[in-house]
Image 1 (cartoon, rainbow, N blue to C red):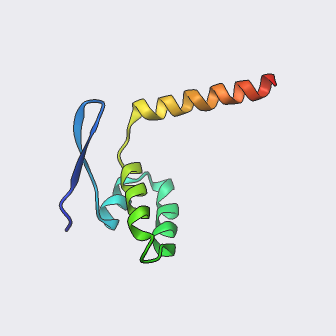
Image 2 (tube, helix red, strand yellow):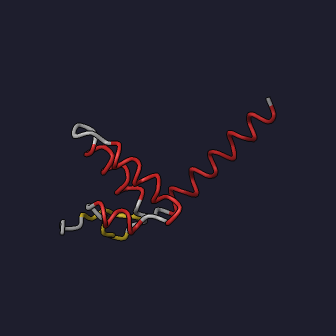
Image 3 (cartoon, rainbow, N blue to C red):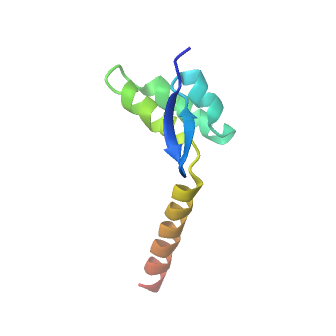
Length: 82
């Protein structure tokens, strides 16, 4: 089993899964089919980027998610007013 990596979320150190089974288990169930497709379709030159993308997605970051939702709402409002 691969040794977990660590990152900081809202000032707290959290483990980041870095194996295919670990990442898959950390994802919400509805995201797992997309993860499976991405891993299965990745070639030898792409698998590192695919793994990095999904391992970071597996770590929840409520502050960043709230910011992205706010930006999306602002953009939707801007487009609606145009």
